[in-house]
Amino acid sequence: MSKAIAKTGFLRAMGAMSGTSLDGVDVAVLETDGVEIAGFGRCGYHPYSEAEQEVLRAGLGHWHGKEVVAASEVVEAAHISALSGTEGIDLIGFHGQTLAHAPRLQGTLQVGDGATLAEALKLPVVWDFRSDDVAMGGEGAPLAPFFHFACAKYIKATGPICFLNLGGVGNITFVDPRYDSPEEPGALLAFDTGPANAPVNDLLQARLGLGFDEDGRVASSGEVETGALELFLAEPYFSRLPPKSLDRNDFSEMIGLVKELNDADAAATLTAMCAASVVQGMEHCPQNPSAVLVTGGGRHNPVLMQMLTVSLDCPVKKVEEVGLDGDMLEAQAFAYLAVRVARGLPTSCPGTTGVSACVGGGVVSVPGVR
View 1 (cartoon, one colour):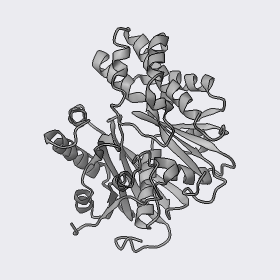
View 2: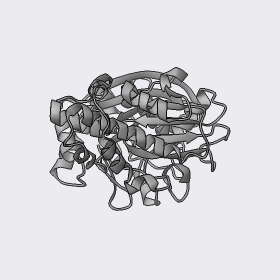
View 3: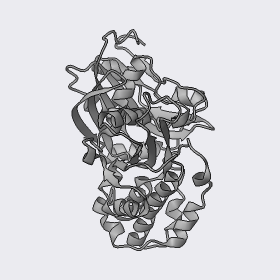
View 4: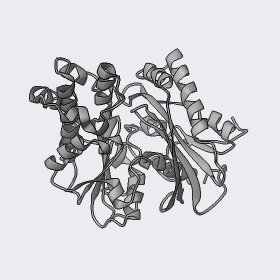
């Protein structure tokens, strides 16, 4: 256990997640001992202003320089505001904002200094969750699978299920809850499926000034361009065996595939690309799950959900149908992982990131200690 967290048993952790959609900061409280979930606490959301979103977009793909410094300042200020009101909280899990992710090349970069947050919030802050995994040969992503395993136990799943997160990038976790712990071989398989909401959001922002396709309204009036879809599925990424991960901009050329299409057809085609990448990814699962539980903003898009429902050989459900919160699952995940880091437990394993051995990433920053 980290000396910063002397308390034993269950802790009340507050997790914060700022995802690749760049819309804002999700905050959620979780009570856990790093193994079991004892209960869920309050949740909150702090949206980024349009000006803040522009600063973050300007930093995407950069590893250093003034754009990175500016993005870090926005992230820190937003999180300090979002995480205020910490009475009864034992520690904070702070993911930061991913600006660049190339684990086989430069590494991974999440901006925002956890030590700065610890000083401002007067609580221990666990952060920099991905670097150790990448340093040991892992993809550094996805990191929610250990929490997904705990969720499967919490909802008393008796057989394999999949958690599908449709944020800016899509990722899937195959969970077999018949195992006792997430690090056991066979308990988990996780990987990024492909781009999810990011290309559609970027397209609609550029063409129509819309942040996203609310209720799938734009895509629902369009037709899928099958030629563009086939070109997309020919990308080598889809034939790579998992674990594997993506940067938000790895498929930025998707916009080029639909540039000659009208707004509705372009949105429909990009939405179909997201669904098709999930279908391709499901082929890597060791067996057909009893259900796919969808989390993230994509679950609110009925066009995307219908595409998945007709294409997959198992029920597709929003996670709310099993009593979980699809808007807050990732924030809850980093609250959970923060406690695991504090307790010296692993946060990723070969089946989730391809890391060479189980690793417990993360840095613990304590107020008054630099």
